[in-house]
Length: 114
Image 1 (cartoon, rainbow, N blue to C red):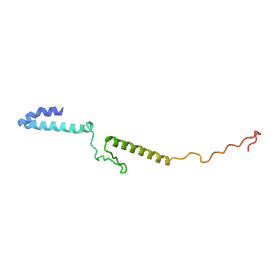
Image 2 (tube, rainbow, N blue to C red):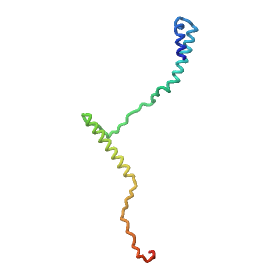
Image 3 (cartoon, rainbow, N blue to C red):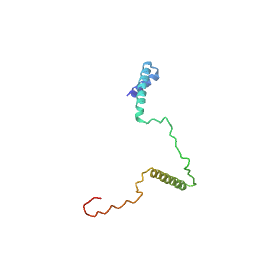
Image 4 (cartoon, helix red, strand yellow):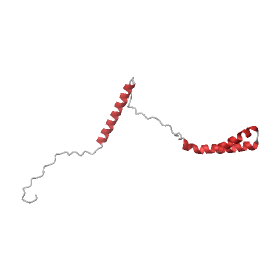
């Protein structure tokens, strides 16, 4: 609405009418203020910190063709998952018995506990 009012006074302001020029700038400032307040809801803000890609030094992808590079990426992924699984296994609690359990003593059936 403010922009419509600003456009209504634009031609008179160009012609030299001082009152129309004041009204034009007044409504134009209102329209610009409304647009500035509405902007955060219409478009996302840019991040203040640039995102940088972090690469591991030990993973080197070589190969001339895209197929070879893809194979290297897949092999590196599998190796990383295997290393992670091994690290988890090292920290796990071992629940396997170290000695075989002894069989229970046979009861003679006389009703007397040993």
